[in-house]
Image (tube, rainbow, N blue to C red; front, side, top):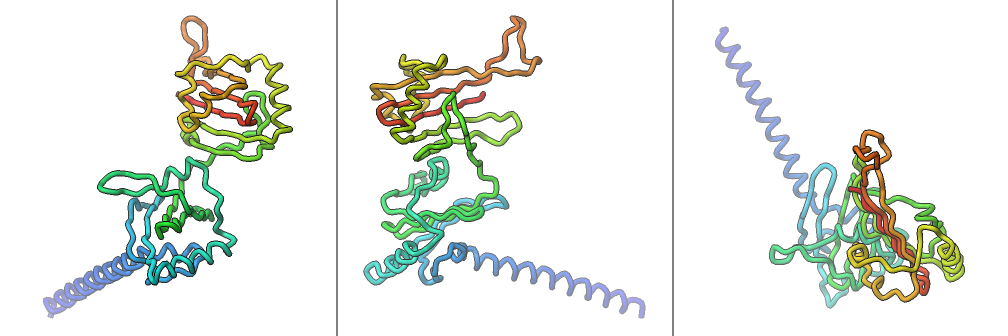
Length: 278
């Protein structure tokens, strides 16, 4: 009698274990079958039959990046319908992301990382999700990043007030580590009126002058080769120093921890700014 009771308990435990394993497997299969539905979160009427295939490039708790190939059947009719939705959507626009965000979008062709085609793009940014639709090649790029680096909103840079810019581009943002290491790389475009005021202020500044910086410093601006052709400009190079007394060396001078560079193009009213901390 006792052996039957033990056997019954064992069988019950085995049944519970098998039920749990089966439940986990079913959940896993269901999740896998739903891996490709992120396109349904983007306020567009894209159905499963609109998606030809997709590639998951990266996926973990904090970061997810995938690329969908959209079925462009009936001589482009599918993509035309999606383009109508894009044009009428409040969440999608033609306004490009900052360059430091754009660089997170890529494809892999023949095991080689390649930049996406930028000819005919629509952009989506809502919550933690960034998405791009390439209307030319019928592709959807989906990026969800819980720890994306947010840029600094500067009010003033090297004596120049920048919060009244006409346009701004960001190529790099420094990391979020406690030591504040990294790079900030921005450009600001100003109106002619503001540009004239900036030029007048720089002409009286103690840290700006018209002497062009050497090539080694200028090559930091790798996304803006036009700086080498500036005819009327002001330049500023400023070293950064550690303020903590523990970093003062035997010569009683402060430890250099980085530098910042400013270039102002008077003809085009553009400020180029580069900040580096070691």
